Amino acid sequence: MRDRIARIILGVCAAGALMATISMAVSVADADGPLQPTETWQLAGLPVFAGLFVILAVGPRRTAGLWELVIANKLALVTAGATYLSGEQGASEFVVVDGTLVALLIAAYVLTRGWTAWTRR
Image (cartoon, rainbow, N blue to C red; front, side):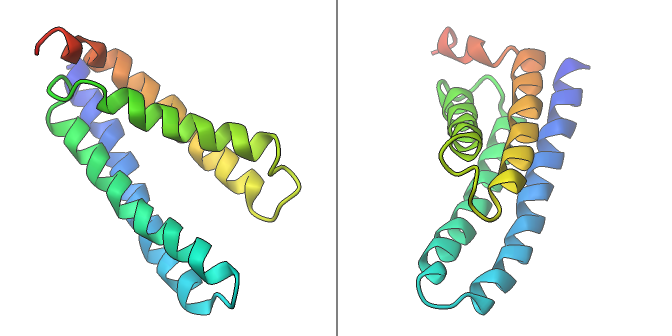
């Protein structure tokens, strides 16, 4: 039951990343000059994270370190958004989005006991 709940959480995370990919594609098309590379970088990362969420859902205890890397990445974005990017356009949005992702990922990590991947090697 715990794994099933975690899989649902990760499925929601993956679906959100895919929806954001579609939305971001429009932003890349509309971006001008110096914003286009950043928007393109974000667009490329979103489906990667959707895939990572699916990999974690399928085998939550098969890939040592993947949980921790994904959580650390999202936590770093929240920290950046809350500190030095706080005055920039869109920073509060990704603090909320990635902050929610961090909470969901930690919940799924605890539910699946993702840290046990390290002992199953």
